[in-house]
Length: 320
Image (cartoon, rainbow, N blue to C red; front, side, top):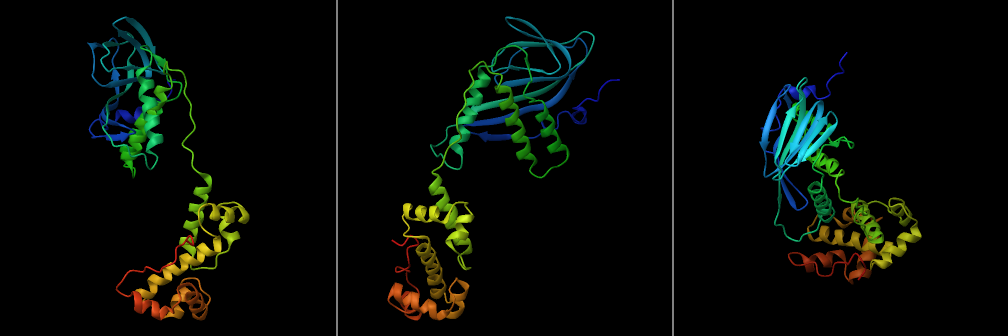
């Protein structure tokens, strides 16, 4: 009994993804999908010698046949793939006795003229995309085993369209990238590995701590509680605050609270007692005390001086 064909779903509308205008940027390259479909060659079918200016990936999920290049002919069978293009003259032929199915990805890859911005992960992505394209260009001109299961991603892309999945475009894009990456791992280039971009861990921890403070400053916060969110010890976090230019955790927290209170006072968001409680102070009296000590004036005097003007005497969160 013949086993079920894993890609049978794609026979319902073989050119479904071909009809979509799939274009995306990955790293410093632009990608335009010309074809991404399942096709079937009847027994003995020959596609005469031709070439493309783009990349064309051929994956064989079922059947067998031959692929011919200028320098010779190679048998090809289920579980293999080969890349033709750019500019590779080739001829395809199904076996004389049985049909051959093919998953085809025909894609245009164009270097982009981009600025030097390296933010939001672009440096890492640029490096990966560049390495992938170089590896694809070094693939041997012969059938190779699909040992990294790139074929399965054709079905992922098709299902995203077929099921009307939310984010179908993004799913198809990621499926195309996976096909490219998995195929490139069969390159003739020696394997190159590298560590993902690192970060200054103490600077990162400081950012995490201060963001937590900004989100929760109006409630009672302790050094220990914030440190547990990182997670590190309170002593480590205190040292990081000093290292990053803040005098201490408590000074940073108080200064941030006062900054928010200054804005609330000038904007007239309520009486002082209410503002104090809404911004983490135990009472209006304690806020009066802290405010007078920090700014040399009462909250009322501060409002009279700064209403309609700039808040030039606001506290620096780092205590500077």
